[in-house]
Length: 273
Image (cartoon, rainbow, N blue to C red; front, side):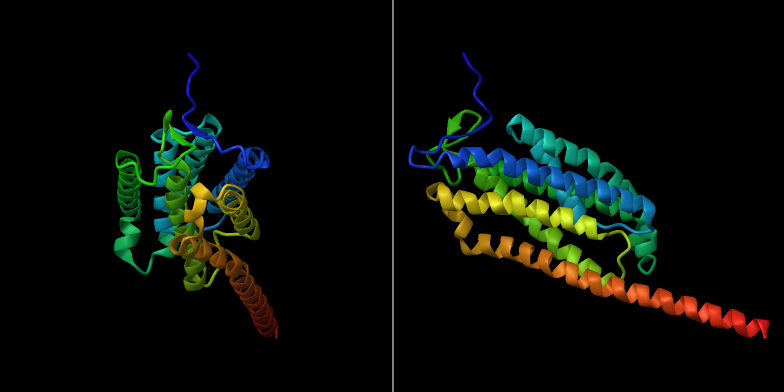
């Protein structure tokens, strides 16, 4: 007997064949851009005395990736991408803990217990993501025709991952923007990190979601719900505002550096006289 795929979608005949063809490419493009973003984050953590991913967003993302890599029954290539994400988060976590002393020196209790706080937040978020997943399938939330999970028709894993993933996306985009504004420096982040994260999210989940709503609307009407628009809209707006704030702060940093250099030069000249 042939094995049943972990997740399977069987759209009705009237759904365009293009629907099947676009699913894997959009996920893979988005997934690999996020992989590149994680590599750049880890590299920047090592290079600068700072970190790029905010504390809660890091804990929440890591917890989500752990649950969906090792507990959630997904198709193999998606589990592979989630597993790669988890592996790349490890150097990001260590770099964040190492550099936390430079960002939290004004708050000794956070500085001294940063690693423990990150661990506690990660465990707490993992319990939350596991509870949501368990509740979703145990109570058969949002059962639909043409949607399968572990060979059973009804439970919609696509909608489950949308709500949990979009919460992570909104949290990361919002806290990244807030962190940039409150820090007033760009250490730990770069243009490339923002671009790979923002473009990757545009492909997966946002382009995927738009395509699903346009071509197979019946089981994807939740994508146009107010709460869905709020989550995705907040994430997109923050990602669009981010580069303008980044450019403004980077310009101030360069001006400040130039002024400091000029002052040092003038001071040296005066000493010679």
